[in-house]
Amino acid sequence: MQSYYDNQNVLLIISNVLYFFMASFAMGIADLAFYNRVETEVKKTDKFLVWSILTTANLFDARNYKIPNELIILGYCAGLFLNVQNHQMMGVVFFIAKAIWPILLLFLLTDIGGLGAGDVKLFSVMATMVGAKEVVDTMIYSVMLAGIIAIYICVKEGHIVKRKLHFSLYITFAFFLLQFK
Figure (spheres, one colour):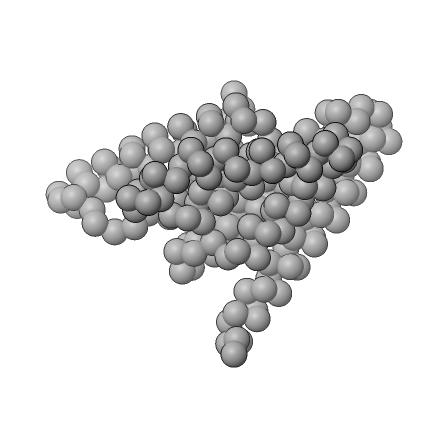
């Protein structure tokens, strides 16, 4: 039996994603009316969707160190939609390939406990929407940012920190920083 908070989480995720889809659709229509450049607008929509999913994942990760699978599934649906929109039926094949490679690459880190499964799935969702280079860059930047913050905390507290980090925050921050590159 689901508790009130579980139902509230599902409703929050659904309402946020619906809002983001409506906003991105409206943004895309408005931009198409002014610029008439479809490829540029698809890239803007991709990044907007990734940003929206990362932000929502941060809210859940900060609250209970978990990224809900419902959010991951909605991200995969958005990624599948974008791939099919860009590549017709071959988009399904591209979607599967894009979704699998981050999981295979980061499986070892998850297995030894260095990275949470939700964070790996978040990278996988990102890969379905943006290019591999951007995902790899985000991986590198997020690990560097988390390392810098961990060293700062160790120096400040005077001992090695044994608590978990909200890695989705570093993923989001790295993705944000890469937008200005």
